[in-house]
Length: 302
Length: 227
Image (cartoon, rainbow over all chains, first blue to last red):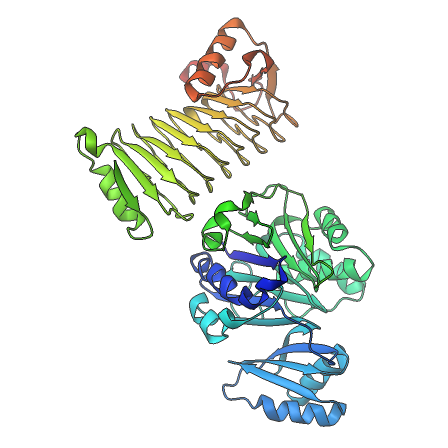
């Protein structure tokens, strides 16, 4: 089944309350996905630092501070670190690939969960209410976020198989559904130079969108191409540094509802998730049409 | 008028009260507030109660309805009035997929738009959609009438049996074995009656009729009377 949600703030004055609204939205989708949950939140870009990387280590009590100190010494730049449960968000005045390579060189069990300039990603096994509390989602500020509650069907229940999937700098995707041609498409993407971390079908969709964006497509163009190349059932919510998009396959059997006011755009698997948003009683509410790309871009003040 | 605030009273308790409503006229009129997208509101009713739901509802609202008259003053999730047996279900907003699925009787009115698969496998229910209906509406529809005042999506009436489909706009495409048929005076009159019961004012002259060509391999014309 799975539940997916997205919240995109058009009004910058609301950014301080992004996490509070988003925590309520995601928690209400717990019944649709009891196995794992995850969120990707687009926060203000770090000042004077070129990259933000979210990493995971399976050991409780892992010393992220010493990792950050060693990374700082090796890269000869300042490295900031904020620890949330078994994840850490590291910020460094260095390119993303240098930071991620530096981290995985320091400890083979460190896994990169998210990367880019503004994206922070947290995903974990278990109930969404516990995960939302463990990572302090309600206190997070930012411009937009996407999230997922997973009921696993086609691959294992691990943090690595949890959504959102990050496929490039600040590009992430969550998925309700299943893809039937992911093996063939994964092979094709590998031949184009894309690299994969799991056997999950959704990672293929995420890498596909990232590949199209790398080739110069707009988010809308990338998703329109995806309608031709992706076979299966899907409702996607996609985030980029400045954009947010929703897409459903032609059968449209995976649910989705969109709501929009002058202040925000929200997407969820079910209306329940949107019921507590401020001003929802006056929002435009509609079910996204099959095979239509819905996308929004942050304004110039972003 | 009995008022139930779903923020304070759960759906199970609401449905229990509705199922046990007495014949006292004062027990037959209900207002439900704060539905907030909850599932199965007013499902499984068997009493002639009148219910107004003030807001948007989740899945299977008024499912399996018998005798009750349910008005939803908002939008609906999947499967509103699925398997409806009798009574009236009215949606003032839009309905998501599979509205009126497998309904056996009664009337479902959707004043806004219906999502995909509206009236899938309907077995005698009458459905009137004030706006447009999504793709594969009337899929395997066996009996009853599906009225779409606006346009219909792709594959309208795919594998339809003996249900009758009226469209005021135009279908994007017809499904397997679904064909346009003559709009006879008898059908015009039936359509007028359906629109009147639904309380939707629109000129019946603009509608076209669609139904089964009865050519699919599983269709046996000797059984047509069974529907």
